Amino acid sequence: MKTAVTIGLMICGLLAMTMLEGSVAEQCPFGHATGGGRKLQQVQGPTPAPMTAPAPALVQTPALSPLPNSHLTGPDVQGKPPLYFGFYDTTCPSFPAIVKRQVASAIAADSLTPAQLLRLFFHDCFVMGCDASLLLKSTVSNLAEQDHPNNFTVGKYSVIDAIKAELETACPGVVSCADILGAAAAEAVEQAGGPHIDLAYGRRDGLDSFAPAAKTNLPGSTLQVEGLIENFANVGLNLTDVIVLSGGHTIGQARCSTFADRFSPTAPNPFPDTAFGSAVESYCAEGNTVGLDRRMSLDANTTTAFDNGYFQSLVNGRGILTSDDVLFKDPQTKATVTLFANDQKAFFDAFQESFRKMGRINVLTGTEGQIRTQCSIRRPIDLTLNPNANTDFAQSQDQVCVPASCPTPPTCKGTQQ
Image (cartoon, rainbow, N blue to C red):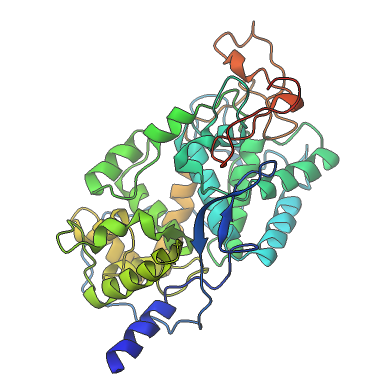
């Protein structure tokens, strides 16, 4: 009986504290489609007891060079027309306040918003660079990034749309959707309890979006450290960035189906904390019996707070995804994970820098790309000036397709069916 109670309490510490909007069925992530996809469930539970962080002897780690947590000025490091701190101070001074207000409103309605906004920015930057290509909708002739299976569970596009709509009233045609993605993610991290992140701006919006790119560029949840290093190196990030940006999982969640391979007795990456692993397996199995793919918090202690609890979970053998768990097992990353588990400030300082580095991946600046009026739709372009642009994205408001990610077959609005 005592064992059962203990396992029950462990599960309570894992469960997210909010319900999915409306029902246990995940809605199609796009507003103009109907029907549900895979069923997901979150269960309310009591506030988990704090998990005591381990205090192993710290291994010497390479020095990190955190940025000062203050408002920066001037250009950011960039080889072409640079990104600038304070880029919109004159042209759109209300930009920060609008982002702050809209993000706060979204979090008040859904405590999982910070994780979704951070994930939006990550998924955009890792595929074709930080150019808001993820926000473009599919057209008659082209399947866009957001309709690749790797992006089916990405959400909160509506928050970006709300920010953009207000900005188009305050300062029309000035702020790019790419900069909105970065600003919203940084603001969400801070409002969830994380560090303030000064971000340089001046990104321009991309002209193309291709679904296959989401398959080849996003890191998988079963990758070992070497695979993660290779994936991050492809976009100019290093081993420290792998660890630091993985720390964003402190407010993240994952479906049981994404780590079900860890439950097998012969699994290559079983849970180090076997009692915890058994409890997780039972929780997921209960959902499977009624056709639910339940969600699990990736931070077993503080599910919606941006802190170093994720790293404490890894040290305690409670990493949920294989790609998380291996960070404490691999000697290349173990020391830094241990450092962050014991020193939240070290994690926060490093996160500021790695977040900014991610925000510079293959950015468009100067006269490249465009400033969209509506984030999901590309404005008309001059093909003489942009000869390599995808003409399948010569889209207008009445040519946007119902995404393939939704249960119904893809169709298009307006006359092009």
